[in-house]
Image (cartoon, rainbow, N blue to C red; front, side, top):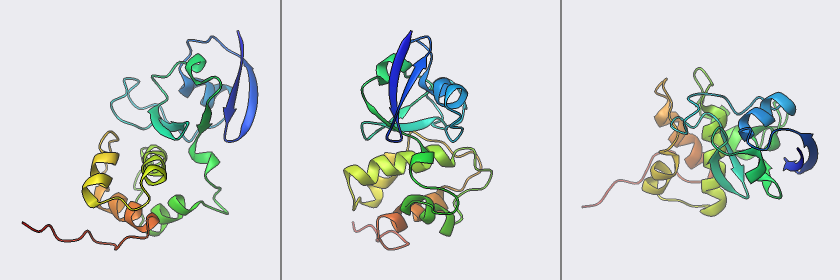
Length: 160
């Protein structure tokens, strides 16, 4: 079946099985390898992209369900030479260790900050919760999101 997907602002006409997960279309047909295959069950977040501004697990979304919607991958935010603001914040905070989860974390952070440019610490944590980092760089990831939002590098103390 031929379908058109808008990815990173560009329409792509593709001849793919409409039930193919979006992740495979992005990686195999479009060569966009930022989103990673982690679990294939929507439990790790390595495959996170945004669809119409919402963070989604691309391993679970059939390509047909993305037709007519705006898909953004980490490649659509910037390049190594000219990183986007969130990418730059992650780089500055050295949030990546192995790097496997980072594209998904960046995309989840992008969706969060687009919806809520000045989130609280609790909102940041809740917003990132669906994505896992097995290397344990969570504190650096949180600092990177605060930096991208223009918030203090450390969270405000909790008042009882």
